[in-house]
Amino acid sequence: MPSLLVLNGPNLNLFGTRQPEIYGSTTLADIETLCRDTAASLGYEIAFEQSNHEGVLIDHIQAAKGVHAGIAFNAAAYTHTSVALYDALVSVELPTVEVHASNVHAREPFRHKSFIAAASIGVIAGFGAQSYALAIRALAEHLK
Ligand code: DQA
Image 1 (cartoon, rainbow, N blue to C red):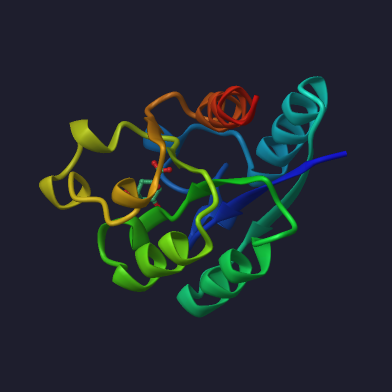
Image 2 (image 1 turned 90 degrees about the horizontal axis):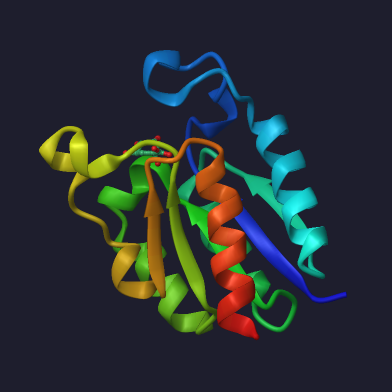
């Protein structure tokens, strides 16, 4: 079965308890289940990873080439800062969807800048855990 990488950046392990007024009460484990179920319904399996470390995220992106058909990527705060993650994404040339649980464009101005968007086929933000399901659907459509 073809597979997708769902990659999560710093502090996303705290989903469920972190700023629930912004991110809700859904945990990262709940999101993983949602991703697995959504992907399976579309004929994909997933690898689901989270790291608080930029270099580890880069390692996951580099290792995805030839293994995964695409990436759903919530780079969290690194979205707004990381040229290195942008470089990793353009290097592997895998279709990537940028994901955010919150609507970053309705938040602080520093969240309006994304280094990930320019290396992505699209961006989904603001739908909570459903942002991930929508990203997987978008990847599956793109890969048809
Ligand atoms: C986030 C939005 C980012 O601005 C923030 O740094 C996060 C989470 C989201 O999913 O809404 O950690 O990526």
